[in-house]
Each structure stands twice: as structure tokens, then as C-alpha cells.
Image (cartoon, rainbow, N blue to C red):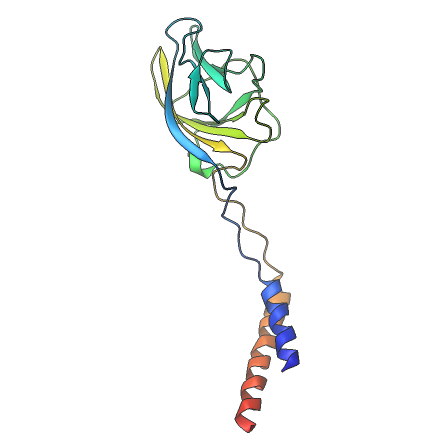
Length: 183
């Protein structure tokens, strides 16, 4: 029976389950940012504390100077990028490059990723524009250190190895049964 226990361990370690679980602690919500006058509370937002503020506050801000844009060019703000017309919950990875601090157009239906301000290292804001007027933008957002979408499944063991282990496991089951039948 010792061989059966070793074989069971080998089979269990050869099967890799996909990882769809992300870092605990992600928070989410919806917020409307406004651009009614320069430096008005409500044009920027700190997603970690869920606090509205002015343009020189938080992770990024909304500004319409002829076109509705997101900006992240003040002290502590690190940048953002437009990911295009993709569902917010389908974002499965965090881009390592391509962030800008200046004038990223706000487009209804587009999803974005922003690097959280320098006081929150390793965190990001994933958001999608759900409504847009000349003076405001409404977004659904997720704040955390992991992308909100499903992780890419782990690569399974090569079929020949997996089939060989299953074949051995099947033989082990038969031998274990046969042994019990004789006893």
C-alpha cells in the first residue's frame, strides 16, 4: 500500500487548478467626478480612502478644457491609461508601461487603469466610464493590488505525463482492490 500512497501524492501534485482568486482587500464603488470650476471638491478622488477632493488631491482628476479628460499630473499622482472598450471585470493583468499623466480622453464604455498615488505603493484603480456630460463623468471602479478579471489559468501538465499518471493511478486502484479481495 506504500506505493499507492506515493502514487496518490504524485497524481495530486501533477494536477494544477486554475487561479481565479485575487488579492483580498480590493474595494469598489461608483463615483461622479465634476469639473464645475477650477479646484472644486469633487473633481478628484482618493480611491483608498473614498474621499473626494480637488485636482491636486487623490489618484487622478477630471478636467474639461474643450474635451473631457482624466489627468494625473500633480504631486503624488502617477498616471493612467485607456484600455479601450473592454468590460471592467475582464481586465486580467496590470500593464507595466504606457501610463501618462496628461489628458487621457474620457470615453463612455472604455475601461482604464491608474497607478494609485505614491502613498499607496503597489495599488491600482481599475475603472470604467458609465456616463459623461460636459461637466461630469461617472465611473465604476475597483481599487486594489490585483486586476479584477480572472487570472490566466495555470498551464496543465503535458497530456502524456498526465495520462501516464492517470494510467498508473488506475492500475494502482485495481491492485489495491485486488489486494483487498484476496485478504
